[in-house]
Image 1 (cartoon, rainbow, N blue to C red):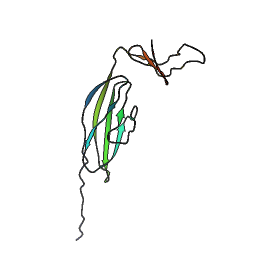
Image 2: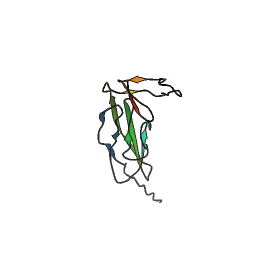
Image 3: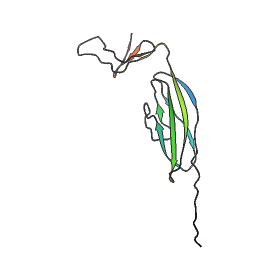
Image 4: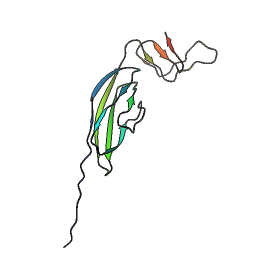
Length: 130
């Protein structure tokens, strides 16, 4: 008669402190997780607008509403997940305009792909009130 030992490892536990958050456009928000002691790795999806998608408590600066899923794993390969949705609101004083540039010696900004919330334009070196 043969004996087989089976080891069942517990699932890791992760809870994101807030599940629904609202921030002003341009603001940052630090995602907070509460984890079981066996959690050794984190993967946030999508990784867009996070300072590091592989840590427990990354800082998010989303430009639009986004739902992040955190997948947490332990050394046994067991995983679990939790989600948080960040809603981005406008204050009627900001505007996000990606792909913006100013040709040399020009006071004109060339705009593309604008998502308008107001009238503050941020460039790489300054903010212009329009």
